[in-house]
Image: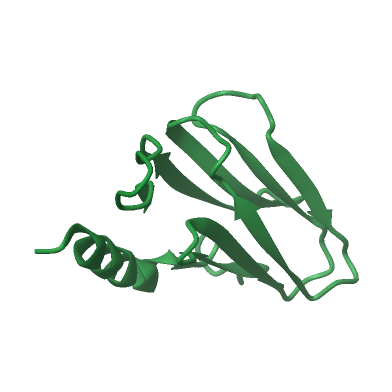
Length: 129
């Protein structure tokens, strides 16, 4: 099977599971929802919709580390936001993209970046979990 087709198929099959609600307790309404997908240019796109008046913090960092690569606050009066991350300059490895509300509700997506592909070959591998 063509590697590019297999990669596209994997991304399409995975995309359905990337729409998330935050981790919350029983009988507690979700305050936001997220959607994350990979573009043809190997960029990440994140969309966030809010239903409450709490601000949200969006953070990208290496997995298991406190080093912040990107952070942005979605203000309490906004109903949503969209972000695009160009991850081509990041070194290969595991990363976390977290969306967190002030009340503790959060969604964390695991991202794995493969090695940059040599010129003239298929694009770099990017895996979302």
